[in-house]
Amino acid sequence: MRQPYELAIATRYLGARRRENFISFISLVSMIGIGLAVAVLIVVTSVMDGFEYELQRRILGVASHATIDSADGALEQWADLRERALARGDVLGAAPFVEGQGMAIAWDAAAGEHADEGDAEPAETAGGTAAAQAREAADGAEAVPTAGLLIRGIDPALEPTVSEIGGLMRAGSLSALEEDGFPIVIGVGAAETLGLDVGDQLVLALAESPMVTPVGIRPRMRAFTVAGIFDAGMYEYDQGLALVHIDVASRLFRTGGYPSGLRLAVADVYAAPAIVLDLAPSSGERTYVRTWMQEHVSFFASIRLSKSIMFVILSMVVAVAAFNIVSTLVMVVRDKRGDIAILRSFGASPSSIMKIFASQGTMIGLVGTLFGLLLGLLVTAQLQNAVELIEAVLDVDLLSAEVYWLGELPSRLRLVEVGRICGVALLLAIMATIYPALSAARQPPAEALRYE
Image 1 (cartoon, helix red, strand yellow):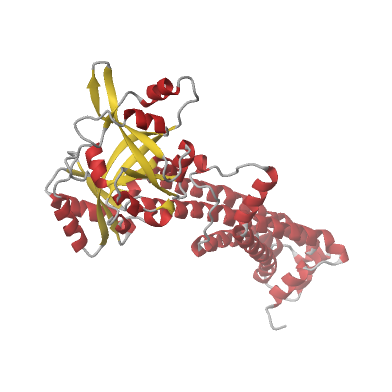
Image 2 (image 1 turned 30 degrees about the vertical axis):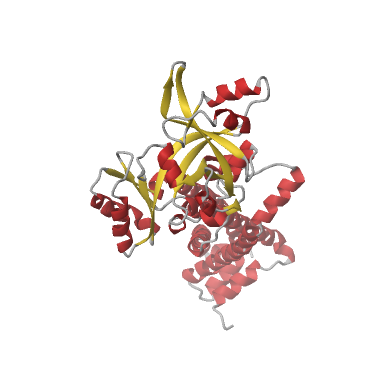
């Protein structure tokens, strides 16, 4: 025999003969159990990694890597700060912005009714609360659709340097914000909620700097024309973000013609905190900084925590499957007491006897792990198709974007994670062979041969 005789005997013991069918069946069950546990762990881990990667990709496609905001509402030295930022080798782009909150009302009649009610600035119009106007003007009709929006004023020429939203347009383009007539770009979720398409009108009600009238405090309002609809593939942005020209936003939120901050794109997204903290003091103004990690820390922390918990729990499932090897080998040791005694009488050492049964258990774990690896890779590759098939057959939405942020099931295989899973499975399988192997090595030959 070219291979060690211990390995040859262990391989022979795995084969099925009439007298050992049950033992071989138990070995097969142990292999399948380990394989299924490994496959489930690979699939779950790949889905967790996929969620984390896809969330990060989509967040960074719309949000900036880092932001420098003025503590006073207007960043007057933004041009100098932008030049200093771009002079750094680790900053890829910088663009000014203005942000504020507003509520969109999808009702052309409201826009027409209040279009002539101007205040001190032509960009704004006066009116009552959106809900009250909708009820009064509709005169008993159905409720007017509304949506709360984060209004972001951008420079369409500079925005592509800090985000990918220009490539996410489903209809229209960012360049349309340069046109006259107060254009606005909204997300596909908000467009569906409001029932709007490109060319339709909406009214923005702004809570900031409300107007004081004899009948009470009223929000300022402004009619806009939908010039574009983007699809970021992420519920938070598709439902709650709207883009206007930075000059229009400056008038709406009264920043005196200045941006409220500067958005940055950096070469290393994980170095964004250090870069922005080093850059912000050079503005000479009171500022505060934000990074994409700070704004979404809870989401990524929850994903990592969930992934760690799931790994521990499913590793226990692998352990349960691996320890089936213990019962299998104990039965083999009891069945092979005569063979053990004969081997010992021919001079086999206790360590050789241990190697025989340890090799048998290791082979069970190895075959099971390989089976689980192949099954896990196959299921992961076809996971999205399986989800779509189940949704079509059962007519259910398994992955609602409102709940899970993403409307599809992402998966991402990482060789490090797959290697760790297979390594844990093999380690548990090897540990499961220790007790049966020691028990076999301690069998007294004479006691076993007495009954043969």
